Image 1 (tube, rainbow, N blue to C red):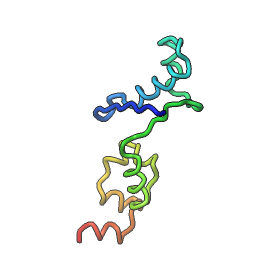
Image 2 (cartoon, rainbow, N blue to C red; image 1 turned 60 degrees about the horizontal axis):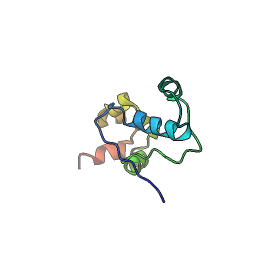
Image 3 (cartoon, helix red, strand yellow; image 1 turned 90 degrees about the vertical axis):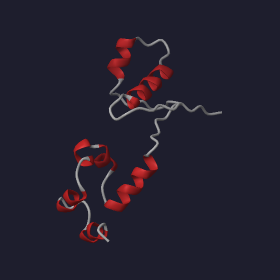
Image 4 (cartoon, one colour; image 1 turned 45 degrees about the vertical axis):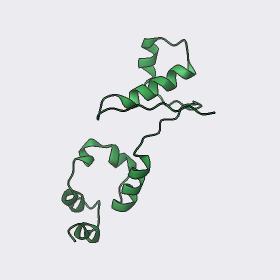
Length: 102
């Protein structure tokens, strides 16, 4: 049996942080708040809860289409670039950029 916990919110509202806290608490049920904060940046493996983002599959498709990485898509500076800037930076090809205006 699997459980699903859905968390929604605006950009930078703390959705990933809540997911991480749930992972920490399920591994260490008696952990203190201070220790939770200290462990937020640590990777948690062997956890029954996995953080899955709603747009994961869509982001994978975007990476394939425009030739970027998932790290790029998580970077706010990259996300704010126009298609013209992505073309000038060599992220997308000339053919792809020109096909956008068709």
